[in-house]
Length: 202
Image 1 (tube, rainbow, N blue to C red):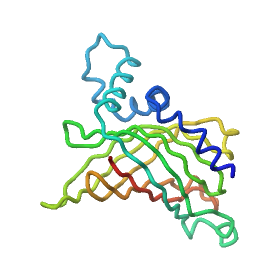
Image 2: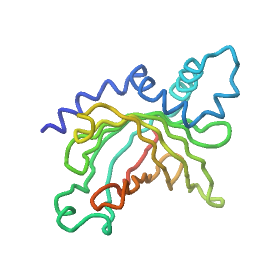
Image 3: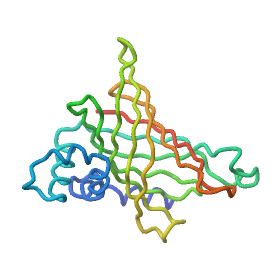
């Protein structure tokens, strides 16, 4: 199957070099306050690489499992919904670091089946503010991710940058996560997709 072949070709994303390179722009975008506090002797690019390397070196291994893609029923026609795939199965790998502020920073590579059953390849950086729920091990998170994404139906598969909101609920080690693609225009059949997936720290 084409999807399985693409999954196999993504194994280099697990390497330190490939994942750091794909995530560098995203790491800089969402962690600007942290980077600004670093020494002036570092260039912007060196600071970005240093911050990403710190997440990779000190973070916990994480497996990503997808999932389900819910398409807004008021945005898509019944005919279009019948054509779309909502079983967004996929697999990813990354590193997650609980930083000094008690929040999560992650680097990841991820491939899922998109709405047309084609591979959707993503690699990027995520930041989530985390709050504990009382004295239980449960916690909720809210933040965002910036990634490079490759899809067959956009730019001929050439990776392009995408920022998206993130939310989660679960324990530190295992969470159900949510990301949302907003509606792009008043026209029907575009955007308004909620992606549900899981992250398990090893």
